[in-house]
Image (cartoon, rainbow, N blue to C red; front, side, top):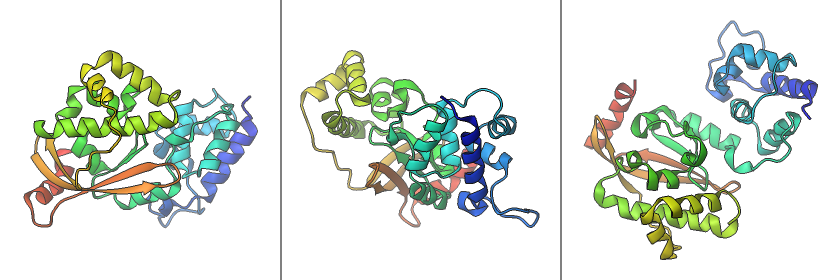
Length: 272
């Protein structure tokens, strides 16, 4: 059951405790309080100001799980705080894999001028910087099985178009090996659903899956990506691992002075 009073109080307390600079917002000379305004929280969570006001005023419908997830990220909640938020809203059972830690959110904020993408173990994109959206598209918009990169890889040709043809086979094996690792620890969870769907939908995946390859294919840090306007970019991929949630933050950089570095500078223009 939803505890509207405690939910509203919790959101209000976290909003008032969070400093604007912690979420990348300017403090400004006219700000009377140290916390965030309601309209700022709404914008960060991707909901309307009126909707957020109704939540704090204990009115309207119960927030959905996607709305709660947006609020948890907007307010930089820890895992325990995120779980508490869901319980107050009447969702007691939560999988903690889909919420980035406050540390990772701060790192992504600090990397706002370079392509950076935060993935879960199964390839769900939780956060992207604007240059990353300009480079590969908005990968946070997918729903259902399409949220998982490995599923899109074997069912959506658009994903493969980002890679040169000769790089695609090892990339598919890499994604399959990562899926196998998660499936081995939790075959009844989302990984099992992905495997069952791909075995039915993709003969290519079925052939790779039958090999029982467990080693992740190493790319030695270098990735080649194909951009529809800028052409091929050679980028080095640095991985930052969150050991608690096993999230992977991928940061893409180019050799200084190289054509790929110049193309990275142009991403802001082509992404508008």
